Every structure is written in structure tokens, then in C-alpha cells.
Amino acid sequence: MTEAADRLGPLLRHAIERLRAAQSATPEFDARLLIAECAGLPLGEVHSASALTVSSGGVACLESRLARRLAGEPVHRILGRRAFYEHEFEISPDTLEPRPDTEILVDEARKAMAEIIDRRGECLFADIGTGSGVIAVSLLALFPRSRALAIDISPGALATACRNAEAADVADRMQPVLSDYLAAAGGPLDLVLSNPPYIRSGDIPSLAVDVREHDPLAALDGGEDGLDAYRAIAAGIDAVLRPGGRVIVEIGLGQEDDVAAIFASQGLHLHVCTRDFSGVVRVLSFGREEKPLSEQEGDRASIQC
Image 1 (tube, helix red, strand yellow):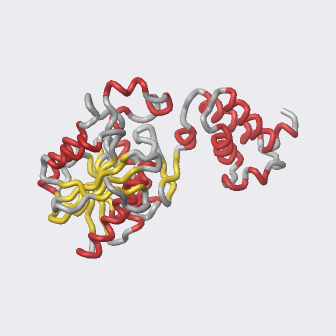
Image 2: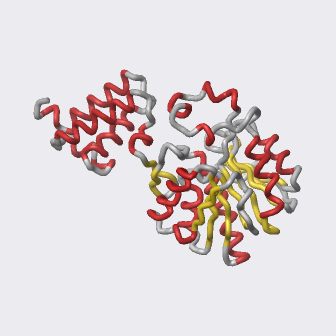
Image 3: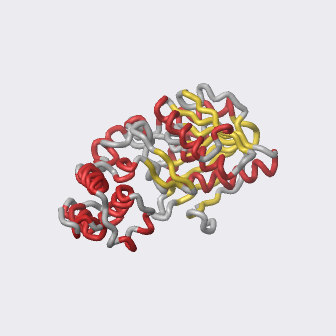
């Protein structure tokens, strides 16, 4: 390779061209992430460093990671980490890759936790299916007077969550729990949170390749109707939820009525339904007390549900 070809600018353009030819959805973004990693640069400095000569090791690194991306591996899987809320998180083959929709759940949980801590002075919450720990760790970092049970059936996922808790300096307030839903949760809990598996088993084969082949099946498959996890969570709530406590869950497209009915069967009333920025109802918040239902769009004004 010539000296010019070792420069960051030509390497970046070549990577973008190859990703475009492979019909990558985000060729420029992916190429910038990969070259920043391999050249040892902050992402924001890539465009201003086009004249930088990349070492032979950096070029080899880029070729290796680019080949993986061209083979369909998601770019954040290649990097082994992804930004979420206010932190960057390690992800592993045992964990779901966190996605922006789940930040809506954290927004709703943040409001609920502020109210609980205002009232009680502390908050003990459970994050069911914690995966890489993005929900639990994000909230623990925001609320020093909170403690979390990070629950998962995967030892590998719990190990990843613990490393992320250490990195965010909240590990002393996060207890990893190897359990199926709330079976070993104890209590009483102020808040139960979950982004559970909610995809119908029959829909798994039609998922995008980067999801189907790289996210763990246990974190995706919600059973025949996609609702198995909600039934399991609802069935265990009565034994663990403190009076005045809340349950906040992420849901899939069109599941709001069914999920609301499942929790209603356990005496929980729907308080808030929150839409994502595509207009899809994405997060439901429940409590035992009856109150007027509100609908929110992200952090925008409440509207008729």
C-alpha cells in the first residue's frame, strides 16, 4: 500500500465505498467508528485528521473489522461497546445490543425514582433481564440513594453488567441476581423495570440479520404471542412490590392493550403510556392505585391516550 493509501482520508473513503457497495444502512457512520477505533482517535477528530498516516497495524485492524462488518456483524458488536444514555457500555455475545428506544424506559423510570426518593429517601429497584446492565447502571449513576437488583438468567450477561457497573463506579449498589424473572428477587421493591423479550417466536426468522444472528435468542423470543415475559413478571409482582411502587416495561409494536390486560389481572392500573419518536407506544408504567391515564411522547407534552 502506498503512503497516500495509508492516510486516514483515503482509508475512510475506501471503507465507505465498500460499505455502500454492500448496501450498509449507515456506511459513513460505520466507517468512521471503525477507523476511529483502529487509528486510536476520538470519533469527533476523524474528519479533521484526514492527512494522518495510519500505522500498518491500524490498517490491518481496519481491514479485519471492515471484513466483519461486510459479513453482517453489527458495528457495535465489532467494537464491543455502545453508548447508551450518559455512559458507554461493554456488550458481549451474552447481551442484547442496547437500542435508543430503551432510553425512553430510563426516562420514565427516572421520573418515578425521583418521586419515590422524594417520598421515602431511597429507592430499591429491580431490572429484570438486565443484560449489559444499561438500565440499572444508568439509573444508579443518576440516583446515589438508589440500589438495584440486576436480574438475568445468563451468567455471562450478569458478568458483563457487573463490569459495566464497576466502570460507572456503582457496583457497590448493584446486586447481580441469577434468576428467572422475579423468582429470587425478594423485596419489597419500590420499582420493577424490564425490557423483556417480546418478539413472537414465529417472527424471529424474519428479523434483520444483524439482530437475528447476533443478539441472544433468549433476549428476543417472547413466546408464541410475544407476551410470555409480561405474564411471568405480572405473576410475581404481588409478592415483591411495595405499596405505592411502580412497574415500568418496554413493549413491542401493538402490544399495549394485551400487556395492560395482563397487569390489570394482577391489580395493576396503567398510569402512563409513552410513545417513541416514531409514534409507537413503547413504554407502559403501572401502579396499584387508580389515576387518570396520560400518554407521553418522549419527554414532550402529555396527550390523550
